[in-house]
Image (cartoon, rainbow, N blue to C red; front, side):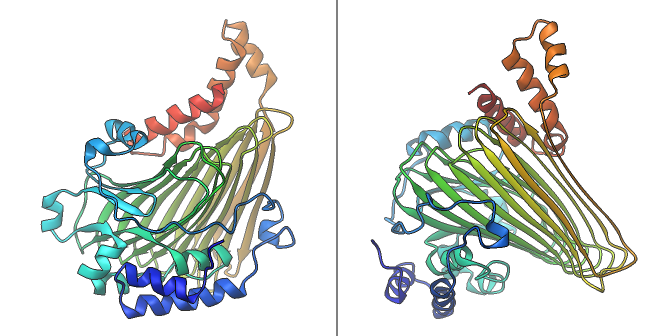
Length: 431
């Protein structure tokens, strides 16, 4: 077993050529990682999750310096590139940035889109202004990522620049039995605008641990459309934490999609720190077999005149499970807040299960806040109606699932991404 200690952290940081301040941050995260226990069902936020089978103590994969041409990219990425509309993209195979395409005209306008390791060398001031500001040592897994992350993407959009087409990152796991820790840092200056898609893929693997973190810093007036999509193969345990810091009049449209892996947990927070900031949070998930997808969300309204809207919808069949726990939290100064939260679930078998816990914590009195949750089996009358029109039961069920998820899918303006998600869901319904 690999020892995750101070020597390991120092060796990793030196290999990546990081500045001293990053190493200090890693050391402090290591202290938190050593101090904090792994969560258990005794913890309120983990009481629906059994981690007894999780591969929590695997060796962390080390960068190998691998580089590939576009034709040499793993097949899952080549397939995605044929059907995506991203204008620039990075490809990570395990911990290595193996390929990158970034439009030169965007570079000339000041956009930076590269690996975190490279950005720390070429744009250290920009990285230092934002790294670890949103995700650091909030729990055992966040601390582990902050101490041992081996790779990640950095996006910097200068003030006033509007990037019309989305930028993308593809992360592929090819080797099982390892732990992979990466993070993304998205930094948009005043009135900047961009769309960013991060996709996580793999084939079926032996038990594998994947830790990811996404930090988003949006300066006044910035607008970001963000999507986190994972279609890992069987055997992957995926722990993802993301947090957005939204300053005055900034806006975030966020989408989290969990379709693959043995287990996936997404902890997604929007911190509305400035008046006029707004956050739209969308989620999609479909579980089959023994998959479990956990979603913990936070809409944190700190200042007045802010708005958030959350809609998470999913379906589970076989013995799959899903958990949704969402909190709308308003500070005392968050007057004139509009906040909405809805979670809708569809059960496709009697052995599938969903636990849904919407919550409000309101410290202001001049606000509009609503929340709701529904979980129900497929309507047998609707199935009967479709079958009476000549549709086989499987196809009828597929149509009902698509109808259930349609209002989330319709709110995804990235057409190529929406088509990809629909195709994966259709495939899972037929399994």
